[in-house]
Length: 529
Image (cartoon, one colour):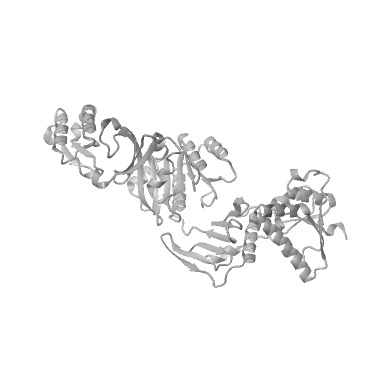
């Protein structure tokens, strides 16, 4: 046979199934040299539990079976173990490098579906057959319609889809026939093939031995492979809606805080609550305010304008991300899907360095999101790291908390010498204290404040009222002083505007003794007309 009829495939054409299709279409005729280093690679991955190794081995069997069953006499498969002269030590080079060099030395045709390998081979003067395929629509997309939130495909089970909206959806079967392993393997190969294309909207975000997370356009696709799962499972999720911040029914106080003050923000909620959708809206809102915004994601599944740089945590270490963000000085960083201690520590370091941070965390309640930081930083630093918590449920912002640091006797304690730094967690809209966080002994306590305890004590205590009036009568006529109970259980002292300066400058130090004696929170406010 002529030299031009010698073909040498790389690993990509086995993983995506394109070699078998090219043989069946008649695009390859002649000697097909398969290097044993490819088989060693697949075997090593398979024996260590890697499902992609099994995919490669099974694809090799499919090729041999197809050739034998169809009697394809114009294709002859040969196995070679010859090493290129330029690579005496195979363990120091990738398999695709070995295959590429061997094709160059033999004058053979390299067969690939990896566009990078294709471009490198062309630059080296190697004749190359590219058999990757651009498809307008992948198989996974055929399961989606306008109402589909996610698709769940499992080997040996019928396909299901969640249809509806966050907070109002149902699980719907998409067929009556169980899915075969071969069908799901073909779908996995198709996704891998699409990710190898240059300028593709498909990319492998996370690749492990037994799992893949792929971002295809707006679809986030999670693939679990045996032995991690008991069969091939593919879950594809797609955001149904894209919203602007103005589309959310945010209280004017919250919108003002987000635009003027909040720089340590947590977006919390259970899975499917709309956290990432809100984070996208917030990122675009800050961009429209003239802020430099970047994201840290793994996977990168936010749909954002090109002006916002999306950084993958998968392809960079925490130290690299830290340096990139500090040196590029964004005004805000959106940190999506914070999961482990390294993520929280990166958020803390960047926030303390002055970068505005928006973190997205899974939590069943707002206080749970705050507790994820307890133990990972000093308690007194907590309000400097987190100043606003937005809790999402059913696609809307349901609760907003703010954090403050004060020195007081914790709720439920009465001795004045027990005063200590306390982090107060407030309902931001109502300005009511919901939780107190403090250190007692060596333990950190997160104490919910009972509403009945917050409201019952102050105004009915005639001694307290008498003491307050006695202190302030030097600065304010007694008949001008009003004392009311706040919703958070505090005692609110209302005086006319003309006297407010004197009360704050001279009366507050004396009121402090009353606060400590009666263990209440005192607030001075202008009197309402």
